[in-house]
Length: 491
Length: 105
View 1 (cartoon, rainbow over the protein chains, first blue to last red):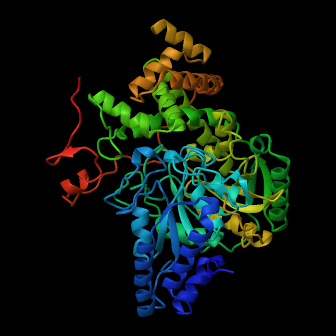
View 2: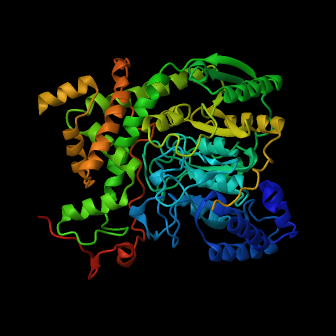
View 3: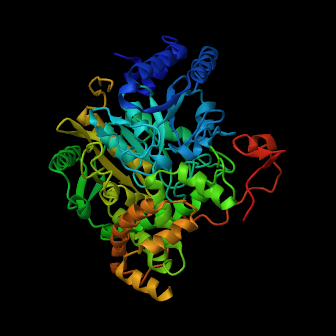
C-alpha cells in the first residue's frame, strides 16, 4: 500500500491536516519510481532535488495556511517531455534536442508550480509526440504496466504509465490525434483531451499546432477535473487560447447521467472493434442506461475520411513546425559540416528518427506546388465536414460515447513495420482533434486482463459533460483503484 | 515534370524521384537506401490518403483552425524577454555572442 494510491482530494486533506508531509510524499514517489520504473520505463529523467525543494516549500505553505493551501499543494506530478521545464533537460523524445535545457517553463508548468505541486521529472514519449505506441522514442521503450510485452500506447505513454504505477498523482500529456486518451485507455487511467484553446500551449514543443492540446492523466475523473481546472484558462502568451470561463468541471461532476442524452456513432462501433473491446463497451452502455442516460445512435458520416485528412494535415504542420530543428539554436549541432546545407542535413539526419522523417517528407509533399490543392486544401475541407458532423450530432445529444480504441494494448513491435496499421490506432480519437472538441478516456473494464477505456466526447468547451458521464461510469464500475501487477525488471 | 506530377496526383502514388526531391527540400540528408525504404512506405501512405479524392467537398470552405478567434494581440508594451546569453545557451556552435554556422556554398 502506498499513499500514492489515494485520490488527490484525500491526499490533499492528509497534507493539510499535517498527517503526512509533502517531503514524505515526495520521497515515497521518488523511491517508487527508482524501484519500479526500470521495469516499465516511464521516466526519461527524475528531478529529485527539484522535487524535494518544492516539497519543502509546500510543507511551509501547508503549515502556514493549512485551510487556504491549494488543492494541489504538495501533490507529486510529472510532465511529458514535450513540455518545457526551465532548467530541466527537455528532449521531446528526440535526439535532435538532446541536452536542450529550456530557459523558461511552459505556462501549464508555471501554473502548477504556483499552486505548490512537486515535480518528479520528465516522461517518455514518442519522438515529438508522433506515434501511437511510444515505440518512437529515441531513448527508451515504455512498457504496458499490465503486460510487459505490450505497448503503453502513445504518444503520452510515460505519462499514462507513471499514473498507472502510482509514481505520480497526476501527469500532463499532449493530445494531437489521441495521444492522451489512447495511452490512458491502454494503461488503465483517466486521460483528458481538452477543447482546442482551453489550455495554453506556450512552452509545448509544437507537433501540429492546430491540433495539439495539453491535458491531464490521473487515477480518477475527479483528479482530472481538479488538474484541468488548474491548468486551463487564458494566457496572453498563447494567441489560440480561448477566453472561456473555467468552471463547472467539479460542480457538475456528481450530478449523474439521469436524463442525459448520449450518442453512439454507428461509424465508430462498426469500425472493426475487437470482441473484448466491444463487450466492455456494451457493458458500459448498459450501465449508463441503467443510471438513467438516454442512449441513441448518431451518425458521423465523414468518419471514413477523417484518418486520411488527419494524415495530411498533421504532417503538413509537422514539416513547417520542425523546420526550426536545424541544429543551430539547440541540440548536438552539426560537427564537421562544411556548408550550411550540410550542417542542416547533418543535424536533421542524425537527429530525426524514422517516423519524424516520414511525416516531414509526407507533409512537405502535401504542401508542395502541384499537390497543395489535391491534398492539403482538400484535407482542410474534409476537416470542415468532420466538424459539421459533430455539430449536428451535438444538436441532438449531450455527449458521444465510444471505445477509445478498437483494440486493447497491442504487442511491442506488432505495428512498427507498418505505418498505416499504426496510424489506424487513432481512428476513434483523431476526429475530435480535427473538430477541436473535448474528450476523455475513462477505464471501463478489462479484456483478457488488459484495460479498455470508454471515450466520452463533449461539444466545444463541453468538458463538464465529459467529466459527468465519465464520473458516473467510474463510480459504478469501481475499478479505478485497481493497480497493475508488480512487473519484473527486464534483464 | 509538371505532366508527371499531374499523373502522380490522379493515381495517388509518389515516385522515388519525388520523395528524393521533397526530402531534399526538407534537408533530411537521407541516404539512398533510406530513400528507397521511405519511398516504399510513402507509396502506401499516399495511396491511403488518396481516399480523400472521393469526399464530396463541393459545399464547404477549408478549416485551418477551429474556434472563432480573430487577430488576437496583446498590448504593445515592452516586456522582458530572453537575454542574449539565455538565447545562446543551448547552441552547440557559437562565437562572440552569435550563432556560428558554416558558410552558404
